[in-house]
Image (cartoon, rainbow, N blue to C red; front, side, top):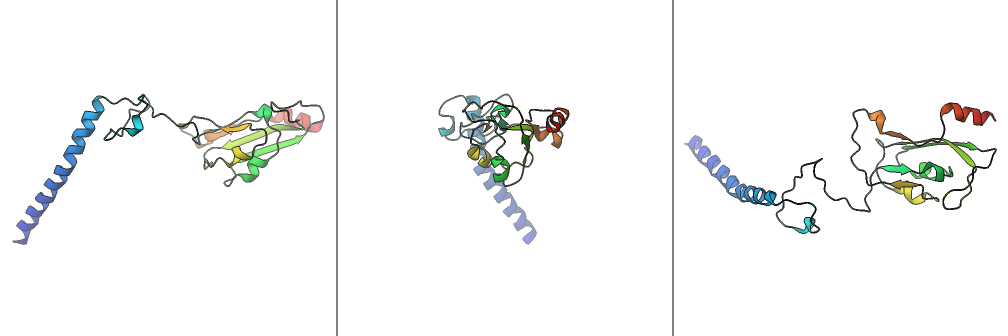
Amino acid sequence: MTYFKDIFHTIGTLWEGIRVTFPHLRKGYESRQNHDIEKPNYFEEANKAVTVQYPFQNIPIPDNGRYLLHLEAEDCIVCDKCARICPVDCIDIEGFKATEDLGTTSDGSTKRLHLPVFDIDMAKCCYCGLCTTVCPTECLTMTKVYDASVSDRNDLVYHFGLMTKEEAAAKKAK
């Protein structure tokens, strides 16, 4: 007798689940018919479909988000503050003293060191933004690019150095 009782209980709970889920499914289908993520009140609309057809549609991204790092290498004074503050050690910097005048950065800081190596391993990066806040010349910034999918993990290492290994060896020898 408990066998049939369990069957009826199972059918009843299944029906209750369908009764609760079906109105949400219907609302999602109806809202998808006029789904427009370009509306300014997109995030305020209630009962909106959650899925967007990526990459054909993108959700608007906020201006103050933390995404991929970018370096304006010409403005870097090789102070090493970004590499020292990084909690996961994803920034690798090598610099050496210049014998000639390297000029100034866009904010007027004097450049005294060559920058042969400035590598950022975005696979290690935790997107905390600490490196961008300590940069005195503000040459290290976060861009609005967030979808950097690659098939090889080594492609997530970004090289921003200004010299090749041969050029750096020749300048060091000088």
